[in-house]
Length: 354
Image: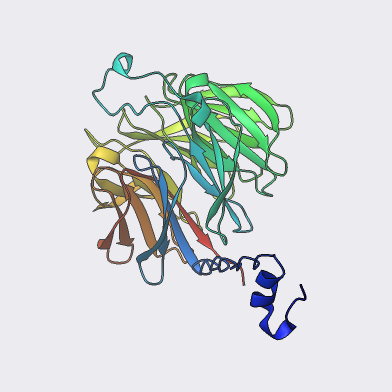
C-alpha cells in the first residue's frame, strides 16, 4: 500500500500501519526568584524550621523558605551571598522543662545550612558536629566557627569544601561564638562553666578560660578589639574583658531580675545594645562610661538582635510572640512589629553590594 502525501501526514502514518507520534509539551521554566532586598533582614524561626526574609525598606516579609530542624544561630558571608544557619536535631528545652523527659536527639538533622541569598535556596548542609547553636565567620569568609552545645566543642569548618578543619574542646554547653577583630582569636561562651574560652585559631587550642558571670550568652567586641562584653543571663550583668590581659576587669550591673542575652556593638563603638529575653528590654550601654544610658521595651523575650547598616535601627527576634521588633534608636521606640514564623531566634542583616 502506498502512503498518502505528506500534506496529510497524520492520516498517512495511520494508512501505512504506523501510529502518530505523541504530542510533547515542555513544562514552563521555573520563574527566577526576585532579587534580594537592598537591605535584607533574615530571621531564623526555631519552632517552624524556616527562614523569614524581610525587606528593610518596606518593612514587609517578602519570602519564607524551609531550612530544617531548629534553625537558630545565623551569620552572613562577608560578600553578602550566603547565609550560614545552625540546624539542630536536639529537642527544644524551654525554661522549666526537665530535659530527662525529652525525646532523644535526631543527629541526622544536625548541621550548618548554607543558603544562597540570591536564589533563596538551601544549597547544602555542612557536617558540623552535634547540636550546633551559634555560628561565626572568619573575616575573609573562608572558615566557619560553630559552637556545639551538646559536645562542649568548637568546630572549625572550611567553607569552600565543607571539610572540618579542627575540633577544639571548650567549656560545657558552649553557645556564643565571636571572632576577635584581629581575626586571630575566637571567643566561645560556656553556660555551664560561667566562662569565656579564648581559642587561638592558628594554634588550634584554647589559650585561656576567662571567668565571667553565670550563664554567659554572647560576645561583642569594641571595633579596636581592646574590650569584649559578655552578658550573664543568670547574673543580670555584663562582664567587660580586657582582651590583652584576657581578664575580666569590670562587671556592669543591669538590674535585679534582668536577663541579658544577645549583644550587638554600634559600628563606632560608642554604644552596646543588649537584648534581655524574658526581661523584654533592650539596654543601651555607653562604652565610654560603661553605664546604662537607656532601655527600650522591645517585645516578648527578645533574643536575637541586629543593627541596620546605617546604625539607626535595632531589630530583635521575639520568640513567644512570633514577631520581629523594629526599634528606632533616635526616639527609642518600637515603630513596628512584623509577624514571622514560629519561635523567631536569630537575626542577620545583609546589605547587598552595588
